[in-house]
Amino acid sequence: MPTLFAQAADPAQSARSTQLVVAIAALIAAVMLLGLIIMIMRKRLLARDAGADAGRSFMEDLRRMRDRGEITQEEFDATRRRIIERAKQRPDADAPLRKRGPGGASE
Image 1 (tube, helix red, strand yellow):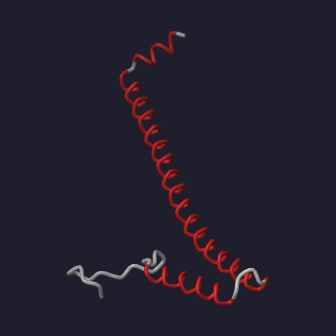
Image 2 (cartoon, rainbow, N blue to C red; image 1 turned 90 degrees about the horizontal axis):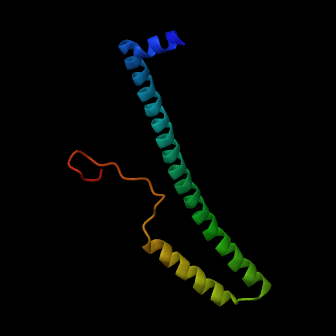
Image 3 (cartoon, helix red, strand yellow; image 1 turned 90 degrees about the vertical axis):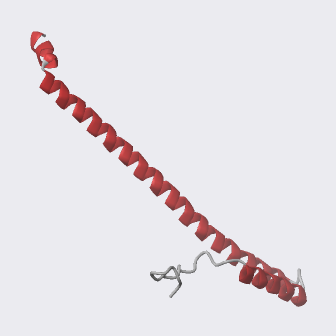
């Protein structure tokens, strides 16, 4: 046991131990931050995909209802036109961003 206490009393060893603990804590924090960023990006990507699938499945449901005779062709066309108008009014989130020139103007 005396050697264990002798090592702890060495100031150089104590400084190295402190540096090691700080480095490990920084590494753990960096890994946790990276994990959080990955989770946020994954959530956004999955939400975007789910939104696109929901729109397609809605139109498929409308087509099936029309084919089964639950709605008329006129109702189907009117609903389809409303969906198209709403889509035109909404800014497209999936469109690529325009490249900006040096003055901030779009090229």
